[in-house]
Image (cartoon, rainbow, N blue to C red; front, top):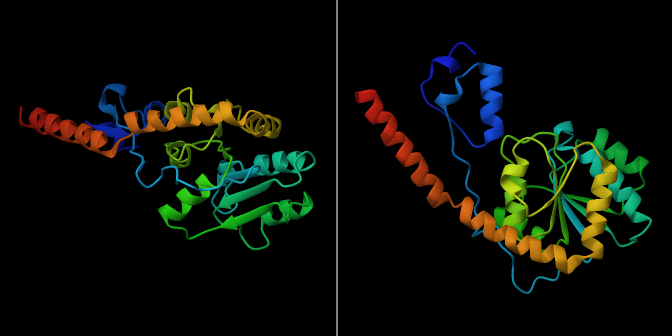
Length: 236
């Protein structure tokens, strides 16, 4: 907090985090530049000839981290299980052995519906997205939501919370829902199950949105321009 407000140029990947830095560290807004992160849309891309699970859902959650909102997704899956007996949730991440998440899965009787996958390569994660009908990002906060961008790059229909930077990434190409709302996750997933073609078209447009706005080459040029501008201003 002592140093931040003395720095002339601070770069952050979202307008939301710009406001947070201004509020929490008292950095003047004029000193904060927003350059989003890029998304590797060449690796994270639809994989041809992949048969997706009709009622397959995917999410990303670090082990027992409340900010990822996994609890709410699990409650939604428990409710959906009564309507779609073949529903399966793949979680990219791992639970803490004997921890909160494992206990909740047992309590909700989801042992057969939920599986965890960890230590995957980017290519393997892209395959999991391609095999899923729905991606869910139930985070309570994201400075920059890579799982959002990666799901969209794979053209996987997305349900995501409308918090922090997430709406900046999704634009109008995902179902945005309130955070901490299992009912909204339930309804968002059900909407996709019942209108798969409509949301697949939205997801394909979402991939185009990612390519046009989160290309690492474009992001690199933005950093290059800012660096040269900062050097010129310093020399003056």
